[in-house]
Length: 145
Image 1 (cartoon, rainbow, N blue to C red):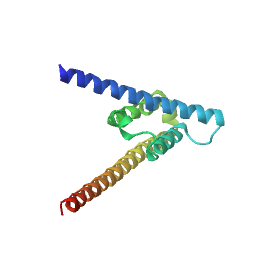
Image 2 (image 1 turned 180 degrees about the vertical axis):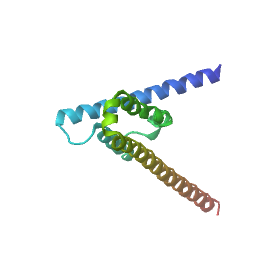
Image 3 (image 1 turned 30 degrees about the horizontal axis):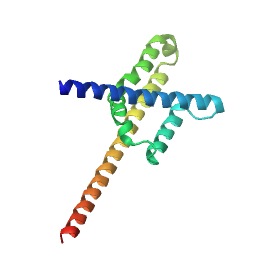
């Protein structure tokens, strides 16, 4: 029974976090339209999220579950461009190779850059955690010593 409650709590928490991230995206879209900003709303939303996390105004645990779920389902976000390219077959026939090359290179670039950034963030976190553990060990040795 406890595992069901914990699992339900985990799901509800993830849904709330995904909803919060969506709310941030809608707020960014509103700001871009309201102020006629020349940057995409997604870039503004990510910049705001980075700022909130960097200044510790928003603890990582408040978005970690939702962000993990969204990243695990990232492939779903690539389905609409594929469906659109099938839907607009006449355009493909006219521009064919150029358009397909652009779609493939664009999707590949996004995947590679995302993977690179995530790899760098994980490496940074591992180094930071290792440094914290070493500092804790040194502190414990000083207290004992």
